[in-house]
Amino acid sequence: MGSAKYTELGAFLRSRRDRIRPADVGLPAGPRRRVPGLRREEVAQLAGASVDYYNELERGAGSQPSEQMIAALARALRLAADERDYLYRLADRPVPASGGVTAHVHPGMLDLLQRMPSTPAQVITDLHVTLVQNRLAVALLGDQSGFRGPRASFVHRWFTEPDARLLYPEADHATQSRAFVADLRAAAARRDAKDTEAASMIRTLLHASPEFAALWAEHDVAFRRDDRKRIRHPALGVVEVNCLNLFSEDGRQRLLWFTPALGTDSADLLDLLAVLGTQDVVESGA
Image 1 (cartoon, one colour):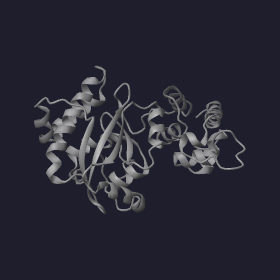
Image 2: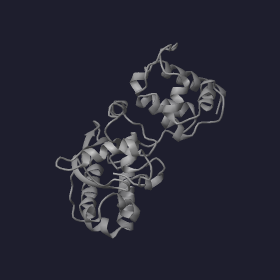
Image 3: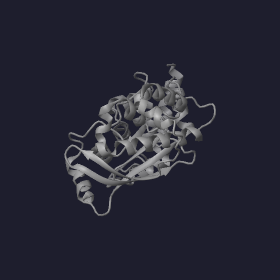
Image 4: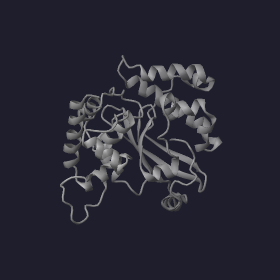
């Protein structure tokens, strides 16, 4: 990467860091704060980077940041879409497509997510790629940050990997399958005619899963706006929740949050999530 771009990258990171208040990202202001925005170590923490590595980036030195690191920095600094794209170009990395795991998360959705610390919540794409989860969502559903390529979509895993179905009781599998297919058809129709991401995913699933092919042939279409779900947790057992959705304006992203279903003991079980943390949770999705 050229030295001029590296210098600009460092300056750009500093300028974005200076404009964010700790409260904007869920951090306490604390006493004796000598800078108006975030400290370097706070940005590093939010992005999952070492403090030394982030310091090197701001100094315009160090190694070229990966696409995953750029995405994490963009989220930590609440960058707008154009700012995020600019950061990728300064790092000489290709600007990612809208639907992958490094997709830009709308700052407003990140802000809402940060304001829901006592409720499991996450932001996903319209193809069910998880972009970011809060701590309780990881505890309830499992950490989904490690999936790449087609496997990043929970719908893809649902129809191609049996272990993905461990999240729901077997009696609910047929209902979930039908809902996923109807939602995917609605999402694909809403996308631009030139879009290839959804079309490629549908072709792959038609070839890989007879179940998906049979359901796709029924032409059912319906967005998943709200659901009542039974989720299997390895320590808590079955937790019955309401899954609510907030859609972005273009429909490409959704903020999901989970509340206890009335008439069940799920409120107590969800309270236990904060105690159990992420120990022994399933590798799954929603």
